[in-house]
Image 1 (tube, rainbow, N blue to C red):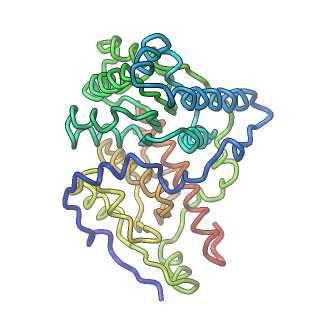
Image 2 (tube, one colour):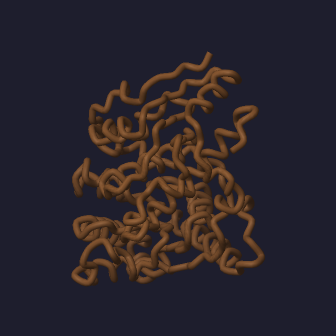
Length: 348
């Protein structure tokens, strides 16, 4: 019989070692390859992004056999070749290409979402975080974004210092480098840092529609969490949580974000009942991080009793963080599909 638990019973005690777990390739992206990326012929930029990604990782393979001194000399002479920045809307395959770069690149290497990297640096401190990535061949950063001035200075200093030591950087984002921070803080006051990040990358823009919205569009409808639980119980022996969305958000405020991954580890699915429209930036951004962790861990997260297009208020969807909220909705749509297809009889 399905076991129904509460996520609020999970221990949220801070453990700094959890930060290291966030520097590994997430479960969802394991086993990806360039061969499984199928460019949309209607959007030639996708074929170009695939070609550039392969060329980039090939350059890492060639340099990984060089001595540290030759790597340092090479990094000084060819700085622009040491970074690739895959720009584009959500659902065009950027994370697929990024994880394919990671899978093929030689060890040592690291993979993290941008917000996880920020949280790891915050938890470890700058010097320890730098020592953690120093000596790597590659770091992949998914969903690169700048939310505030402190992050801008911190990450610019970290990456520029590591890049001078020979680190290759691959990143994805919904925002071009020169537009990072727009609508979130006075980005013009940090142009030097933003420009230094821009100079680190060759920027490849990928066009195309959101494949999740195209393939899973029916999942936008409201889902009855009670009915969902009944169907799960009738067909499987899963470990599932059920909490009102408001209570779940309250529990998340008690935990450091690097603990979210451990929080959901024992469960096969996370269900939030009594969904409502969120109009608080802090609640919205915290929920986005939680959604990302569930998505990456392949632990379906479903919010019941609300149409996903209504999950974030019009004010939030018009804010400087609108792309984050849009990505979260896109991933929720896919997770609704996944839990539905995994349980016989559930089709929304």
